[in-house]
Amino acid sequence: MKTKIMGILNITPDSFSDGGEFNTREKAVKRAKQMLDEGADYIDIGGESTRPGSEKIPAQEEIKRVLPVIIAIKKQLGKDVPISIDTWKAEVAKEALAAGATAVNSLGGFLFDEKLAKEVAKKSCMFIIYHIKGHPKTMQQGEIAYTDIIKEIGEFFVNQISFGEKHGIKRERFILDPGIGFGKTVEQNIEILKHLSELKKLDLPLLVGVSRKSHLGMILKQNLNIETKPTDRLEASLAETAIAVQNGAGIIRTHDIMQTKKFLAVLEKFL
Image (cartoon, rainbow, N blue to C red; front, side):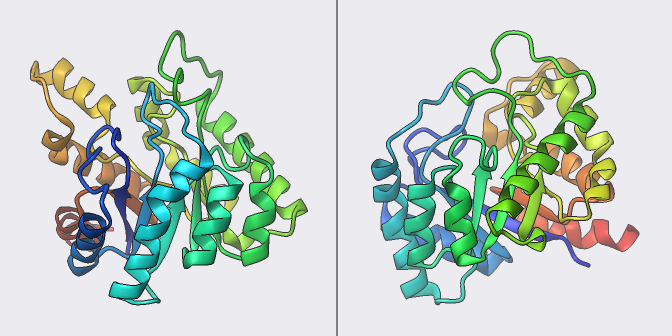
């Protein structure tokens, strides 16, 4: 099966790579069209930054950012455009799903808002759980310790899936993302990607997002002694994408659609 591509569309002023770049309706719709034209299978829309050190925003502010964009994409680009809403808040998910979103991509699954399970169950939509240790504001501060990182992430997924099933979400609706960079060191991110295939025992699709992330900048600094902006990390992102796909990722979440599409077209010839 071909690897699917999820395009990142942040409607935020402060996301780490593209904050402020697409935070008007017109710019966001134009970018969504470009991503679809380049081969994106899903558009993942987020209205709250979850970069390290980020502050939470009220649900109403998040809704104000994402809802007009979802409505406009559905109206201008077609009602069948697959849209996921990147939120952990039940209130935001409810409004986004009512406006036409077809999936929820949730930081921590139901960890930060248990009411989210009810909204997902009502719509029978796909639900992506991405793992986090701690909270975005402080997740990269202090010592980040795991006894067995893959085992702990796996147990987290089992618990979140069980909670969702108890609230009426069918198991086949879940997609799992180990949350690269969310409460992990550089070495821990590498460990996850090396052993990603161990999470396949849960028998659910795996999604991985490494696009432009800061740990790639750290690796490049350490090995090549160069400083990089997020947009300078394409090659590094694709290197980790290769490892992720080889080890079982079926969906790649990225800012760079066309480049990832071309890369996968060749990589998949060898898998």
